[in-house]
Length: 303
Image (cartoon, rainbow, N blue to C red; front, side, top):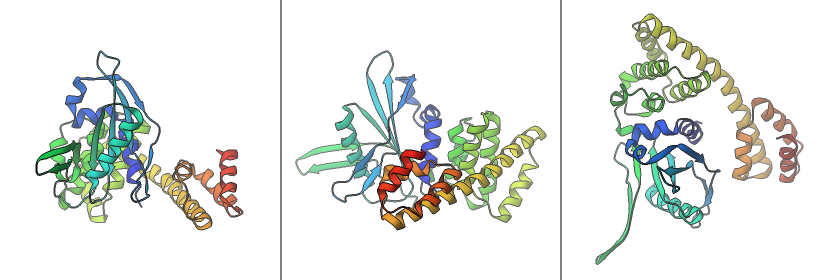
């Protein structure tokens, strides 16, 4: 299973202003880029369904030449959900109540299908008057053409082209273009690995597509080809390491759920940040746990 929320949160928190520049350049005209604070993870309970949901990304920023602040809320939606617009309104209301600040809400729709435009408003009206009109920004990736972003040297573009509208025959070329753009950006190794891993997760090629990718790679200039190959080799090595980590964490969470049923979201979030070694140690210890208190005690002593 792909952890969509984690991948998008990692990408957008690392390249937040690049994301804003790519999709909402008008915001840069009035925001102070030297001030950016990501607020702690928000867990909100839906009072009607009883479900707990985590806010994907909440940034506190400041207007230019003032001491006034506002929040930018970015929510990634990886699957189709009925009345998602109402959920965005609920988030807005809860966050506004908690922080008493203006909120700029953004939804990223990252699912592959359907391609119909998703709602960007929520209204409450009667025959004689409109009571409420709530608007939010929508970025629906499967309705965007990757070709539009080819000439925009932006790390977020290099990543998100992999989730845009792509004809089946173009998949190898899009992956190559993502990596070629990434190579020209010359980021540090950690950020390069993050984006290349994102691309590889969402544009995993089959054998035939891989052959086409390799053929297209040979058409690049020598320097470009070498830079792209460095990235490919790096994410292959990182992918092996991350694959082992994800497997270890999935196993220990499965064991904990078997012991205790549902695990609180905050505890699950702690475990998901473990290294492979930490997850393996917790797995061994969990075999002897008798209650959730044993888990809490172990986490307090080992993390």
